[in-house]
Amino acid sequence: MGGTASTIIIIIILAVILFFAIKNSIPHFRGEGGCCGGGGREKKIKPAKLDKVISTKTVKIEGMRCENCNIRVQNALNRVEGINAKVNGEKNEALIRMGREVDDGKIREIIEKLGYRVVSIEKN
Image (cartoon, rainbow, N blue to C red; front, side, top):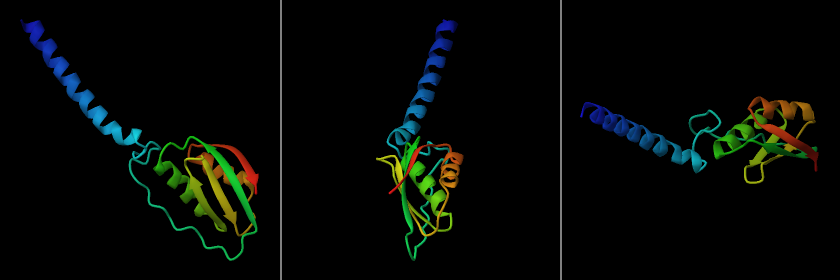
């Protein structure tokens, strides 16, 4: 009887752990969680207002899985002087308007430093 009781207790403990694991994973699967290590929502920073747009580029990005990922990439790009970026997670791309010329290598470095992969950078 002692072996059966301990087996039941172990099963109950595992069931409780599984319940909480599933409960805490649901927001992540909906794209609401911090899959990118943020653990929560990052607030969007206001992009720079450009006096004149000298160039526009579209950057295709792999690895963005949630809204928090999109915001992280958009904020990182918008922190660069002369860049006004908007990230579209559904298309896995960033539309970058530039008030000054920014090297493609710099754009790639910013995005890949966050853990995403730049597939292409095209001048529009």
